[in-house]
Image (cartoon, rainbow, N blue to C red):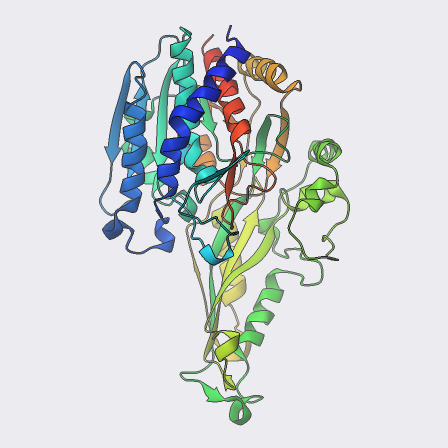
Length: 469
């Protein structure tokens, strides 16, 4: 039986002495995901993050550890770490080291994306919580068990550098590295969290993602708007018209049937349960302008909207000069970067096909219309944990927080989850993490809640110890 408080005390010291210094070094590396940096290979920063973590891992004096680096032709680098078990069972841990872009000018005074800053209870910096800390936490859980003479199953760490781009390199590695991955009984992912920092949260559902660029072109060169405005149809107006095909602009409802899934009665009940815990803080914790109202005012409906219903976001644009330098010119084209979150159960490939056909067919005024997509990602729905794992999770959570673990949903996407569920349909999945209110992953002032990460290390040690027993 793992002594939870003793492991937590060990974790507190280990984070201070070992993890935070190395994680701070990792934060200093820009390491943009390949979709955001076409010169990633030349820059070598993704490789640098792998090297930093591998070096730290080998310094931990973990018994039975081996590391394996991979870089298939043209693909982003991948690190696999294996630790021989002293007991039955297999566990696979997943994390990623690539990052989203940053705008340093948006960060608060004294903070920057590439400078790790400790302001308790936070560690600030890009990649601190998404998902740099994950590998550190999970390997430390194994070290904690070994340091306390506790048996543990064999474990494998799969650490990629393409997640923020949709993990489009990962399927090739899952095939190529099958012999290293084994047959996991439990897959553990840290790239998540919950609505507060008081509990241990488990993520039971994740949305999938379709994203790409809608391009509308009407001319070969810009024309004085006084000479052509009203004759040449505006590319922006055409783009608006096309978006109306897929979204009701008055309500935000997505109009394409293939992007929806049936919401079962028990999901509605779960929404009410989660709403009772998070309350108004779900909306109050968002950095909205004064007076803004949510699409749905009821908290349970809001939870369904951001987890079980599709949603469109226009996340970027092209063909538009900055406001300060915009001339009176009818522009040649409008490009809009679209991100559509899709609920679990939606076939992302079929949904992408319907979306593409809807946008490109019968273009208004005969304009040149094209939708160029990235590889789509399915959503994820977790099966129930095995009884022994669920019991260990509950006992650790109650010991360290005074409350049982609480399930939640996360509207974001972890492509790995759906990929692994297809590859290992009999495995159990535990998706959790130290993310929570205000961590601002992908945004300015990204930060890791250090006490939650320390506590979760002890919880994961207890969970891993239960596998195979």
